[in-house]
Amino acid sequence: MEACLKLYKRTRQSFVERQMVGYEDEMFQHCIGTIPELFDGNPPFHGRGAISFAMNVAEILRTLELLERYNFNSGEERK
Image (tube, rainbow, N blue to C red; front, side):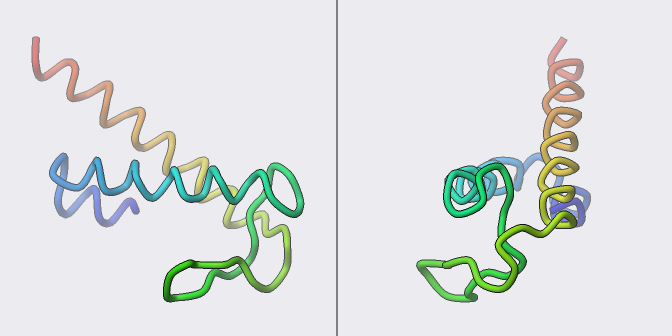
């Protein structure tokens, strides 16, 4: 997600935000508050592997922080 934002800047911000919505739904299934290790490559993207994988949760949190920074910086640019 970070590479996508760095390369395409604000034009891909909504794409990244839509990706986060899918993960939010997944966090309320199986082991609540976490996400699985792997996902299917084709829709409907079911979770597979370990039901809780810390690196995936950390990446989601990091991406949310990046989005907050992009939103904050874009607000400064508009002033």
